Image (cartoon, rainbow, N blue to C red; front, side, top):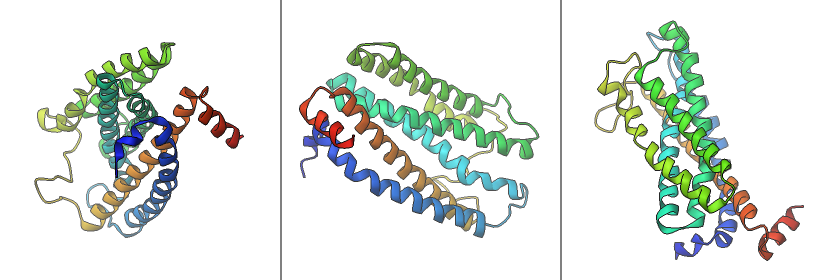
Length: 244
């Protein structure tokens, strides 16, 4: 299959529409399975008690906050270098989802931190760098919205996104580089997991659920952006007319 033909927004639009229900359905199904494993079958943690169960939301959202930013910066860079309009639209579509994932990670982290650390917030290296990530998302969206010309806005926001990528490895390695209050990773590619198998399975299934959710929402938002940019084209007017 020649995937390059979908680089044209008009051709990508129906493909995205066909994929959204599949990823949306997968997100719902995986969330039900993941929460069942995490809340119903995972054992109580010996040190944190039942409070630890928020990790089934906190950890996947924290992972996705970084993954979505890297994806956003990648597509923004493609749009900047190759003047690819669809790539820029994908970056713009990913930004609100990434901001939501980051906010959710910070919020659930605060709920976890209160019973575990005795405080809602500390200026810990990981928490602070994650907060900076939220500001980068907000800055990306604000800068793009502040420029009237869409193509100039795409380029300016892309530069900010690419500069901000440096914060992602800082978030990931902060617990290794500094003596932080935040605990280290329980799941690693280089060593065996340090949590019980039911906990691990629930967390991984929820991670897949968050992946599916982010893809579904980003694709749906991209379709709206395509119609907004191409609203004067005949095919877009037909789509808008059919939707009305």
